[in-house]
Image 1: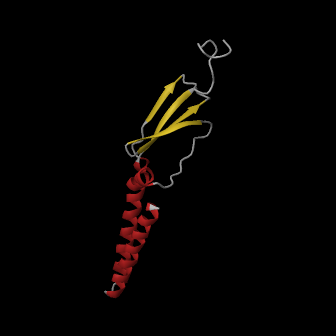
Image 2: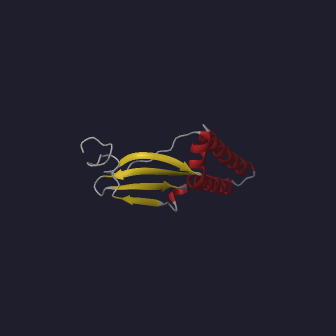
Length: 128
């Protein structure tokens, strides 16, 4: 919902700049201002507001699990989403950070991590 309000405000500012440019006799300058407003709003949303809106106010954000991996869990740390996946081919657990604008993303790889299969000989695990 908050995302819709954000984009409605951006569209209102764009229409206002076009209207003001037309009334002042310079529609070209109004169009330039509208383009700058749109570009600034899109960059601000992509690099800052998307995850903030989803975490704090509800919303929708889509990410996908890489091919061949299995999703284990996700958690928020500050305004960044951390996702844990398991890669059965390499036997690694991979924690990936989805930061604002997908810049400066962190990644933690745990080798010999196999959370999906029981190990024979482990205490308390059937099949010893």
